[in-house]
Image 1 (cartoon, rainbow, N blue to C red):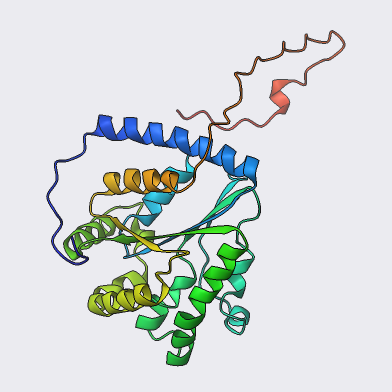
Image 2 (image 1 turned 120 degrees about the vertical axis):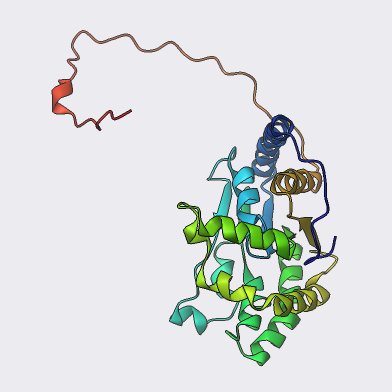
Length: 269
């Protein structure tokens, strides 16, 4: 299926099967986390793609079972006036993984090749410089022993429209429709052209682009987790079962403070 075409029809993934596979894969993610920590690996995973293509849901399922001390999510806001004067990659560098960490970028420096290019938030010279310097920058990261994984979430225009409509009428999802998302509807083809150019210039051997079919969210989540796991030859370092030590006996000299002196939240439920 090509981006923008009608979604391919597949049998709906059974909820029971999806949940069982997700649990199995999340257990493997915990094993991967322990391996990354043990080997002091530096893993950077970049999530890009169309609005409402399912990036956020995939990131959430990856991070659910993991320690926030080891697996971190970076979703930077629009640059400040000061940051606009910096070297373009500068504000991202401070968020790169150190040894024993995996960092997930929910959008990244590729904003320059996408939204900034389409919406004219950068000059043509800045855009051209990005396409030239980005592969050099990523090769530098790889040479410094940082693993760079790049996912592009693709979604058909019909499915994106359906999800946009669902967000409009959902009281807890209004925030997912930013003014930029709405403007992108009228520039679908411009975004497609920008994506094609970005792939042509930045799909390098050291850090290739991997495309995720996002029309089926559940399948996309399972597929991207399975693929990420396949990229690292990890071993199971799960610790032996732990025995809880006996709890300390009550000290007869210790007098608990009265419960009336403590502020409890109202028990509404």
